[in-house]
Image (cartoon, rainbow, N blue to C red; front, side, top):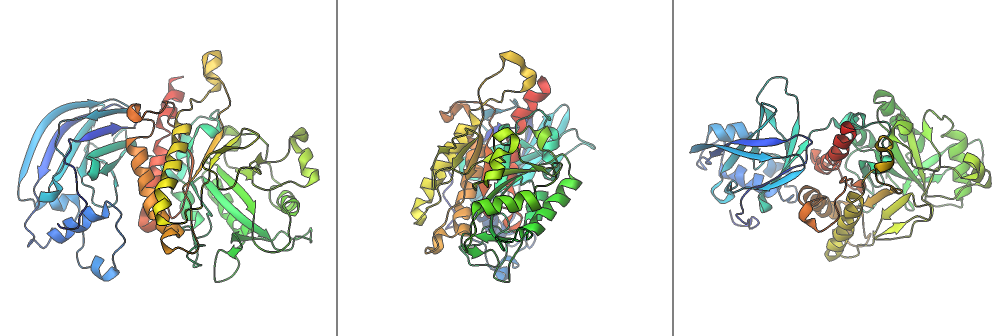
Length: 494
């Protein structure tokens, strides 16, 4: 077992971030079989534990040499077995530090936990057999609830979320909910998923897969193709001055059609789209704004272009325009002279914390990570922005005069950063360190009473990341969506 991270043997901590109380009822321990067992050997245990720290992916030849067993196989081949009935209640949104020893990784042990809620039982095995997250197995037919668990073995910490249908998670929230009160997964340079320069490619999967797995904020950069021809709608997708694909231009029109198709199939959802002009050539922001107004955002049933944060009811089945470009003079008179689209034109460049003059947008977009050692600085800025958002308490209209007051901005939190000249600072490399760090923060510290930060609804704002869905890993998206549970519970209680 040499080479594995050192694990502090601390008692198990359970954090319940679901909206339902749970009670831990049964502990079962399975000792690992001998390494000679062909079904479950030490090679699997080593591989599995290592994967929990997101070690670099091994080659396909080495990965195929030892197929990982399921937890059930591990239980069936165990050398030893013990069980213990317990009664450890964990209220909704509570954290309990138990006296339960976690699975002993050095002896290749597995700990199975069985929880009960409303008379139904659900179980989870630790450590998990794939990524950090796993779905709890219901032990009764037609269960009322679904739960997702994230286990961090280095802290002996288990977090439980209410499982969301990622394809249509917004339908659980009321129409009156301001968009700024939601926890929204987003992607940076969202369509940059093609074969490209390694410093240009930012995503592992295409926008269609991102939408189907819960992403609801797209960061888009475009270059007008024929800016002086008013009849031409061509907008080329770019990242800075580079095309997003080495195989030829990719177009904004195709991306918009994919979004339309998704929203038609999932009318409870919305997509916030940040648009910015980049690329080469001599086009202007005014030209881009006219192209968008005349050729794209022409249907008010498809686009939300008011210069204020919408409610979810106003935004459903629409693209919400968040503009990072200036307007043509004619568009400055839209909406009774208030302008056109959510105004994010003037946020500070490379900022750890900035609020736009309108007060609608509060952003963390520090992206100049010039050395791998600076990634920790980026993580700290990202966590600080999460803490700001978490402290907010949404003023729901149904609360009346006694509710919280004040404007809640849309918090944008970019986890992205890069340095073209440093391999260790390309988007994929930074995401491999930053995304798991934010998953850990969300599970153990976000909106936690002992975090030292003010406690609110626990909203994350918009968490904008690179390389989500890589090799099927949607943990960050699941954690962000799971943070809507407290707001959902508040809404249902009103």
